[in-house]
Image 1 (cartoon, rainbow, N blue to C red):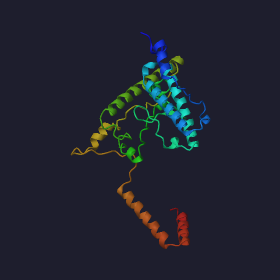
Image 2: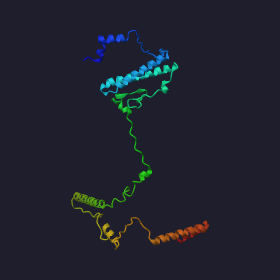
Image 3: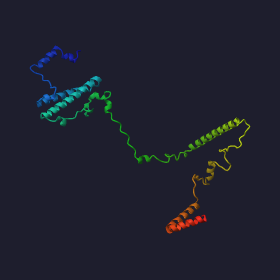
Length: 285
């Protein structure tokens, strides 16, 4: 079967076309819009360009045309759009309507405005070509930044590690590791000691034995024993203070001294206080 182009070139087709065009002179569209000086003809050429654009936009929707054919069609459509703009400017110069302002926007087959960059637009399957799809991908929206109040909601005692030992797992592991490190240190110390004795030929002995820092004295007790002793009869657990805590008597003495200093500053003059300090210095108080 012959293609459509070959059918159009047959003798019968050319004879029929000649009959239809008999007595008619086919007028060609001017190359430059400025060559047209009649408003009706300018409107006619604008409508002709719009018709050509519509046909090519319908053709470019077929993604099976191939990449090169789609690119050529898209270039032709953009060329016709620029030419249409020239005719719209000429129509305005001849006293016609301003289509650039009142005309509709260029839409695709889905009713969306045709995307483009700096005047060049993409239609149909041209929007899915390699290198074009990336132009229209929107950047992901960054996650909202949390406020200080939202961040403080997740901060508790566990955040600072205050309750890491409450689970009863960490303390035994630390004790086991501590014993292992101590045993390694003792073994290393013994090896070094034997090496020093062997280097002296065995005749010279160490006069002063190094103090065994890991020896446990009788008066010392382990933490577990201290903890058991400090527990009350009713089983209530007590706590060990790792910082010096003043007694009730020391607190009362400190309050009395503070009260005396406040009274002296309130009622005694500076000269009297100076004399008092000098007398204390002489007496050695």
